[in-house]
Length: 388
Ligand code: HEC
Ligand code: HEC
Ligand code: HEC
Ligand code: HEC
Image (tube, rainbow, N blue to C red; front, side):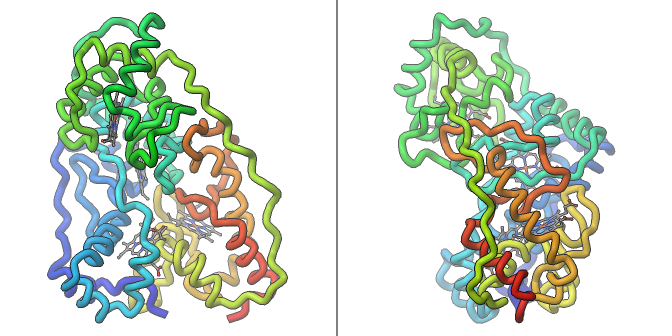
């Protein structure tokens, strides 16, 4: 069972492995560097002042590499020779192909918001199915990271206080300036389909200062050259009116519907091949690797060796033998994720719900819950004694 990419073969296909290089930017304090390392932030983000993770480790790096290789006919042909399951990879790899720029986030977002977000992340980009994982960081780690953000905050001009007088003008300018092509604002969802990386602007008042919001609307690339939003030449007057609308208008959000009744184990016979193909090999394996598989080269992934600040679990999910000792934990972990979805994976127009989080995060961590049909399949397979 060689589901994961053999690193050596991957190196041959790519030519060479990317060497870790430090991201430009002021080096974080030792406490922040420790917290970034504990949270494995560089597996997904480019963190200023911290080494980039290699393609073999990086969730975004390897996923992007798979997508780009599949778009290049010559490289794709070579890849298909090395990886018998290449077409399955191409079909399945969809998450973490793009993540927000941390330097753009550091330049504009309020450090206090970062601190609470790291403690209890929620969906800010409803068009993006995947989210940020929860972390096993403590308050000191979160404070150190927020402090690192504070040292990168851009300096901006003072602006008038938000006023309700501007609501009508701001609402109109948001549309006529083209913003709603990409962004939603609460119940006002973007002209279809919007772009996944554009946040729901109803979160701005919690995330950014009034002055920063005006400066960002006028020229985001001036605040952060790495911003994925470009400048649309909005005047100061119009930017202030839009900001006032974003800060003071009622987003008219709806609540996400509460989860339906828990799915039950299927009574149909289920094989390992089915649950491997749809769940364990496809989604869970990347964080819960079996180090004894030659292709994994001793790697175990954050869900097995410990990662994102969580301790080692010793759980690999790449074979029935790996799963059996932990079988009773699997169903509850999948069902917890259905509860968390009300906060972590909302639909456009919905406000992330405040939840009392279960002590342990639901699985798959950071990703949408499995469809009920697949949960039934896994529960059925476990109930049937986990046949090969
Ligand atoms: C597994 C991938 C992954 C890891 C690891 C990860 N993040 Fe994220 N992060 C994301 C994704 C995806 C989003 C966007 C979520 C959304 O907007 O709903 C995000 C969003 C953010 C944001 C908000 C930025 C914005 O523009 O909205 C911050 C800040 C952030 N991450 C910081 C961190 C820090 C600090 C760490 C380490 C403690 C970390 N991330 C680890 C995937 C990751
Ligand atoms: C060395 C390359 C590599 C690395 C590193 C890697 N992945 Fe993957 N990932 C893959 C491949 C290949 C697949 C498709 C597997 C399959 O379907 O058999 C995949 C699939 C996935 C999937 C299911 C499909 C999707 O995109 O939603 C998730 C979730 C996932 N990976 C998460 C992660 C996370 C989180 C990390 C970082 C901790 C990570 N991966 C690191 C290669 C990689
Ligand atoms: C082509 C798509 C697109 C258009 C059009 C667009 N934006 Fe953005 N906007 C983005 C993206 C993507 C981000 C996230 C930037 C990043 O993470 O680097 C963003 C970020 C923002 C933010 C920060 C929000 C937050 O919560 O972090 C504000 C405010 C904003 N945009 C306002 C506007 C306004 C006002 C307009 C119209 C003048 C506009 N945008 C037009 C794509 C767009
Ligand atoms: C993005 C990485 C990631 C993905 C994907 C992931 N896990 Fe995990 N998993 C973790 C981490 C990290 C922990 C440790 C959490 C803790 O200590 O509470 C964990 C813990 C667990 C646990 C132990 C929970 C307990 O009660 O102690 C189970 C069971 C589990 N995962 C099952 C799964 C299943 C099943 C999937 C696929 C549907 C999956 N995981 C996908 C990272 C991941």
